[in-house]
Length: 344
Image 1 (cartoon, rainbow, N blue to C red):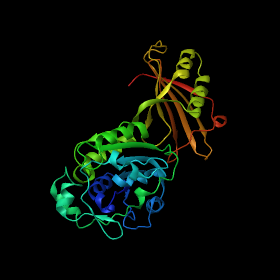
Image 2: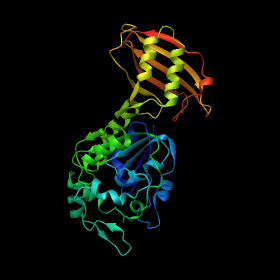
Image 3: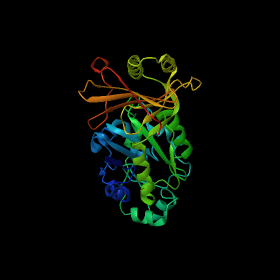
Image 4: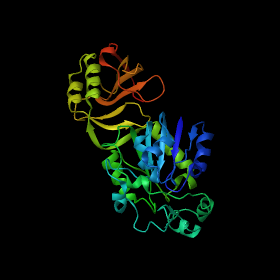
């Protein structure tokens, strides 16, 4: 897997060094671009250009880097103790909501760029919750931070529908953990993953963070609130059930089914929530109703509806080639096949 790690304010790609080592030792490819944070002329478009687009990668953004994350094409967006932009608004309007009241201590130069005046201030404010050695390790490296990306309105009217996750630190002295929980739930539509410690988990717990990043790829991410199926999802469910005889009960479930989770890998698979008072029409067997077709991009895509103990539990949509996939075109799907297997 390819990971692109986007740093926050004042920092550079160097701040990911402990995590990079863990990920690379596990066989992953890792990029750590530098944002033009000391350039007064550089706004979110320039930050986006510095990172580039990586449709097959997991892009992880820390702190201020979260403001550019929705602009980056990726398989999965991960916000790490990060700011989440509000469509069409400058983030400076949200500072009081998102940032701890004790956060601060920087000085500004004649151009309005901020910097940390001493290692003591850096350790007490930004690196609080970490051993002092990390502030001492970092202090010679930070650059000045221009205010441009927080003062310009976020350029999109809505966040993209890229798969996403949020990881917060419970003792974060910068981004308020309760704000992170709320924005993960209400804006991103996911439940935040929580780690102990301060604002920089990639420094003092890189193994734990790497585990969370890789595990979210292989599992479903629960939504904060179940949502209705999209038109494409519902059409696929109806198509698959139409090819399976004797499933009136399942069709009844499908009409009221809701999506409770999405796959962390970036494919289109979703977990389903249905009325579990329905009869166990197929006993304990697991039923797979599957088909294969192509989408508008020409990718070969497998779709499969999974039924366990008489309930719809998952709609799988995944491309055989690498990278995110769009659902297949209904007219290009093969007739569904049905397979039964014992439960795990």
